[in-house]
Length: 316
Ligand code: NAD
Ligand code: UDP
Image (cartoon, rainbow, N blue to C red):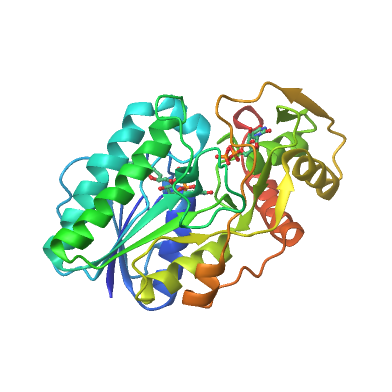
């Protein structure tokens, strides 16, 4: 297949490109580098990979045949989408429209990277795909949550109105190598702080929960979904739920860091609990996460250690 990946220079996009190339597909990565980094793609020189620097909120022109479009472009960390509210809304709406239009013109399969944030601060726990969510549309997180909800609605409309072959993956908190050290998400934030011996900043009282999935498991789930006939949304995430204070303590312990935990105000609308019900992925895709939390955290720490060692002290 020839696959277009939007958001290819990002954390997840770059891992998806690797996995697609490993399966023998040709990949065209499209990214405007707003939160991505070409360093995530450097190792692909010489492979069946092309890259175009382009903002997908503008018309996406791809000459030649395309078999699948994986739409991964969007700021994803809360500090990124709070800094880039309008770009986030635009890439979820206009960007999704353009990516769907490209898939339609090429008669390609389309996969949308959606998110557990479509469930907002959930009143149902764990979250099944049938849950409609509890989102504040005008709160600061609304720019991301509503953009993704709109993107799902538009994807459903293209499926129904145009018969486009679509997939929707609702990704739950995923971590691993190639996250930006300072992207503000819990795992890289705690790791960069613990590695530097700085205070580890837990927001709120740390009793809110998340369920963290290692990147290789996520990529495996996405590829299974791409190759399946499942057009309904599918949760992909690890159901192992932990409190944020617990993951902070685990990271400090694994790094053997002298850091101590300090508490900072909880961001507005921060979900109190999150855990995927993965029955649909298990039954329809035969998917199951395989990498345990400590194993995944250790692999990620190793990446961050190397990354820090290669940076001049001023950039750390
Ligand atoms: P990331 O910030 O590392 O990657 C996003 C990429 O999209 C970046 O390379 C960025 O430059 C690019 N991009 C943003 N706007 C663009 C535009 N207008 N045109 C072209 N490129 C653009 O984040 P990530 O964690 O890799 O997330 C990737 C996707 O997965 C996002 O759609 C995100 O919503 C979704 N997702 C991620 C998680 C997670 O835990 N990592 C959870 C839920 C959903
Ligand atoms: N969090 C925290 N300290 C940080 C960064 C995040 O306590 O330095 C908390 C955040 O408030 C949330 C959880 O960790 O409750 C997960 O945050 P992240 O940004 O990783 O993802 P999301 O909120 O989108 O699930």
